[in-house]
Image 1 (cartoon, rainbow, N blue to C red):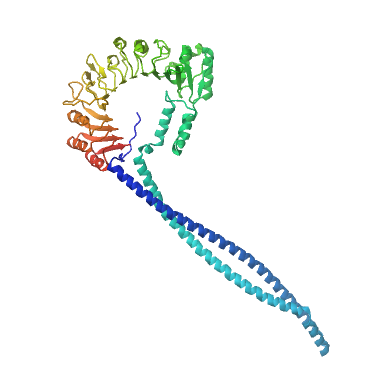
Image 2: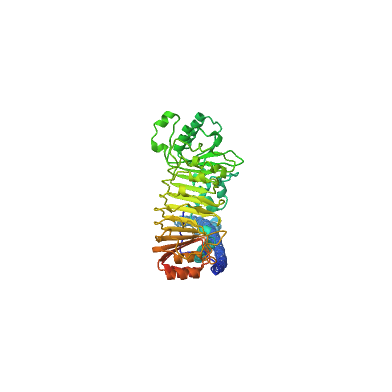
Length: 592
């Protein structure tokens, strides 16, 4: 049985839900304000980054111009140097000729002064001064741009820190909103591995309607979380359905072997119409590979036998000689059979149950009509060693069909769902080896008929609907430890003045569960707890119940044996009352 325990959260109800909704609205408004601040911070950061980029481009252009001007300055300085060397050369020549006269020397100087060298020198000197002034100006501009760049970088760092400061409450608020949404919508709290298990059960459902899309494709379109879970489950996507068109036993057997080898250990289904069930040799081979047999008849389709894979087993054989060499463990692996029948079904008790391989350990019969119940003895004849048996909505109008069945000496788990019939003699099914008995009624007139007292010395768990005609009167179960009571649907539950102890020996229960009860309007569960005898400690479990918190608190205060309380999908109790209850019992488990 799959169970989820999530604590210490409590399913909200009444005022608690209103408070959560108000908190949720306040958190949403706060998150909106913080998001506006974050958007403003991001805009400031974008402006700062754009300004920094422009300044960096200006610095690069200024530095490029500065390099050009420095190159020009170097060229001017080289020209000045060249002209200066020319003047020095002429002066040296004049000094080297002292014999020339004054007139000669004056003529030379006039020539020199009027030459282009003197004008070129003056031009270069003036250009040098201009370049030096321009280089000085560009240098000051670069220094100013670098200072601006430093200021913008400091502003950017401050904006980023402010953004981080504003993002911190955003994350906290989002977590708070997620927690509140999880409380208000408990289905969101289901872990991914539980969803995966649910998807696998849905994909293996015997009467799952087949649509245009496969189940993994359907669940992947619900939301992103379901899509991620489905993608992490290769089993959902690797199922192969093979319609068999050739029904000759030898061909069918070879085809099944070939397909089994092709998929290796992957899942595979063979759908075989009941009118063309293969010979028992082929079915024995199939049973050695498959883990279960499901038989379903649809009034608009042919009945079909569906074999489900057993991934731990793999055997390939195609002849009777091969079957003789197979070990008994490979052919006698336990599996389960579920039979769903309608009014048009014809079963004579010989097919498909008279198989040469060992009988299953679990067997379910659902929807047996009166004329089919005539053959219950033939149907159940091969299954005397069953360990789990489930009877759902069967209508045995012929008592001899039930009373003639051999007792199931190895049966440990029995489940009976009585929906339409008024009584059922379950004596042939109540074996002394029973450890768990589950009896569910749809109305008060239906009851479990026991012509005599039945002793169930090993019965550990009893589940039943609490009507007037309950199985307490003639059942003896001295070892009972767990009692599970379903709420009556169409009639009031009985009033108890003494403990339904199953005989003279008082019960020493360790756990009692109530399912689908409205404890506020029907105090029968609390009255029952007042008169029953329990062991040293007792765990109370309420599943899908409306709780009367005041009565429950009063009850657990007066009885120190109630050391643990579990509330599953219950309403009518708020967080503060849960805290008080936890302080009384010591251990409180709440799950949605």
